[in-house]
Length: 173
Image (cartoon, rainbow, N blue to C red; front, side):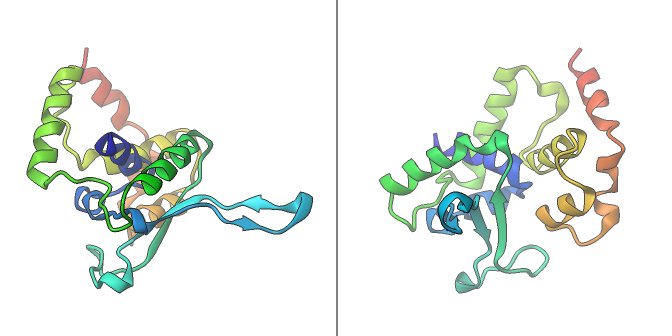
């Protein structure tokens, strides 16, 4: 179950496969209340990638990237994350599979789902999230760039074109 949840989180946060396997439950923070009375609001669940305290930087040398789980379609994750945090030690990893075992599981799921023609790989989750958010006009290119921790606008420009999805879908027919 952790792996299924983590895979959905990888899509939501545009994670690289190695980043997905580096998330510990202690990197996940619950929403905090902001304000008081009728004006009180809750912030979003948030995952901190590459915490400075662990001295493991991102691919691009960054630390402490805070990624909110902030879209309406992602709210169900909050309840699930709370249960995981309540039932497991804080230093537990969200994904306990090795890279090899995750890859094997991924390939089995791809075959079972009948989408082998897509030549799907776990890295595609990163791009699927960004493409989906852009196609649905949920995030601007700047927001996608920040969320995906891309440093060049050219790295995200292809998300505004939207032509890959029909090409990929055509492979399935």
